[in-house]
Image (tube, rainbow, N blue to C red; front, side, top):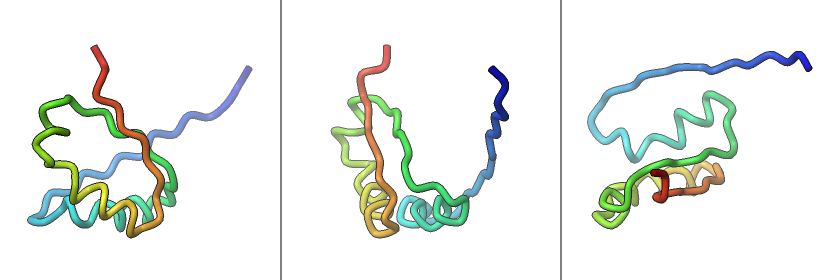
Length: 68
């Protein structure tokens, strides 16, 4: 089976970026993403602004914290 695999890369660093993630992903025409993190980051609430940005942008997401 032949198929193209494209892995676009864009690195952005700016203050308040967690609240703008949805905007950048919309620009990349993404509508569903997977977030892989560890339980400590999730429990600390560090991803909450990212979740809110994604929801505001209409981007669906799944989160997994159980990768070993």
